[in-house]
Structure formats: C-alpha cells, structure tokens
Image (cartoon, rainbow, N blue to C red; front, side):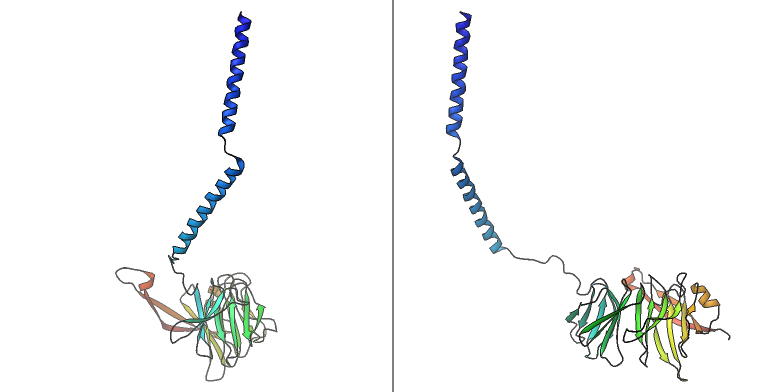
Length: 288
C-alpha cells in the first residue's frame, strides 16, 4: 500500500513539474520578437537624444586667458607687439592699436621666456628657458642653438652683438653668434652654482668713449652690476658666488650700484596693489 502511494506521489510531482515547464516556455518571449523590441526601444531613445541635441545650446563656463604665462616682449618692425608665452609655448603677435591677437607663432617654439628682434628687424629671436635653446625666425625659417638650461633674457647691443643670460636653472652670461653658427661664448661662467644671482634682465649701452657696457640686477640682492664688454675678454670670468662678485674685484666688473627698494603697501595688502620703486643710493667702485 505504501509502495502504491509513493508511486502516485512521484507521478503527481512529475506531472506538476511538466506543467510548470510547459507554462514557463509558453509565456517566455520569442527571441526574435525580443530582439525587435530592443531595437525599437533603442531607436526611440536615439530619436529622443537627437531632438535634445538639436535643442541644446553650447555654453562656455570659463574663458581661458588669451596669453598663457606671458613674459618677454618686443616691438616688431611692423609695429606689432610680439609676446613670448612660456606655458603657451608660442609667440603671440598683438595689434597694439586694438589689442587683438593676429597671429600665434608656434613652429619650433618650446616655452619662450624672452624675445627680441635683430637691429635691422629681419629676424626674431627667443629663448626657450626649459630646453636651453635660442631660436631664430628669419625669412620663414626657424633655426635653433643649444646654450644651457635656464637661458632667459636676450638682448642685442647697438652694434649688433647678441647676449643671453641664465636664470633659475643655471647662472652665467654668454655672447652668441647672431647666425647661431659659432658655439656660444662664455663671458661669465658659474661652474659651482649661482654666482651672479640670476641676470633676469639686462641692457647694454655704448659709453661716450665707445666702450660697450652691460647693466643688470643681481636678483636676490640689492645690487646693480655694470660690466665692461669692450674690449671683449679672451677667457671667461669664473665666479663662485654672487658675494664673490661683489667683494672681489675683477677686470670685467667696473661698478656696482647699491639699490634701495621702497614698497608702498595699501591698507589691504595684495601683490596686485603693491607698488615698488628702486633708486640708486651710491656707486661702489673697485680699484684696479
């Protein structure tokens, strides 16, 4: 009797499982129709996105600076302003009358820190401070020469001599061949460190006696150096520190001017509103 009841229960269980299987299969979606439904849904979604994109309005949240890290500049023979932009890796040409950028020179420009035109206006020179190169653009052709890392200020003298100095990544003063063919020539060398304290800027002047003189500030101090460049030294001057430059006489250094800096700080101090002035107090001359 127990055997018969067990057989009946097994048969009922099998029948129930069969019914469940049949119902689940019959209620499931047809794979083909299911794919069609998915494609239809995707098409409707794309249609909605197209409508939204058609009505979308592009807005600029923040405008970037027209010049990225503007630094040195010079006036070109065309009257436009040429500005070197270190981070922008370009030289921007600006119309001085309306302030609009009319050209961006990028070929061969790798972080220009300073720019200068040749005295005849036929060539544009710049210094790439990170790569240590000096570039020249003449007749549409770019030519470059490696000087040293940190090459920064660049200036022509009235008689066409080209000078560059190093900053931050190096220290020293060089004269270059304007054609960038001959090797750079050291005027002041700093083999052990920062002897000049960075010539971040300088200028030259022909004195009444015809000798060429270079003026430049010793950046971390309050000194303005006056260097005699005529006659040109055969060998470079090797200095150890900026202090050595100030206290030890050497033939090239003619005068050192002590500067005093006065800063007028308003009630709300800020770098933008701080005005600083420098003036000469007295020249310090070294004996021969």
